[in-house]
Image (tube, rainbow, N blue to C red; front, side, top):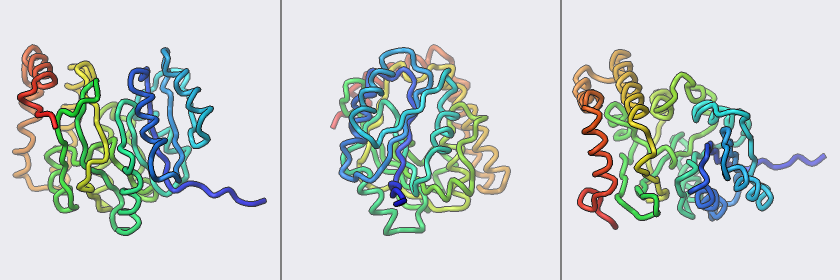
Length: 278
């Protein structure tokens, strides 16, 4: 029997009640100029039109595989579920409310194949609002030295833009299921200890920001996890003790009064003065 050739990339997505932007997000992957991929979508216990949207796409494109969780288990566990299924050389991330521009996969695979020492690759991106309007440019560090240096300050990758080599994930392990949030940041600390990572200086994704995207309580949890990861990296000796200075910003944000954080978030998402439109 002739062996079926497996695709080079698995695009993995987890979605929970994402009916508002899911169609646009899925289409942005299906319309990629690079065609050799499978698209694994975990429906994490959705109870709205998300299920119907996924069923319709499943009928249209054989590259799509849908796994349905009987109950909501969260992003971290759902992503790991997708990782157990795929056997492809590269894993690409896509969030259910974000958009990949048409040449994203093509440009990233071309770079990775020509630069085999790079095992994780992100890109620049646009921050967009619920209407899809561009609010700002997101420009993470480009070269490995900058990425590694900035890791202790903040997450150096836009999660929805990342492609990582599967063999590297096999070596470090998948997402840590103790982390309900910031699971990507935790993973990058492990990946960048054994491998090199960079960001393509190209705008290849659009990351959507919504006023109700993250609850303030969840934001507080994210800050706690961030501080924990940064402290652990310094204690391990991966970074100088002088880097404790970088922990000041998340610490102050954690201690900031709830009413002020709520006001500031709403202001930043709505103000044209803060996010200059392009």
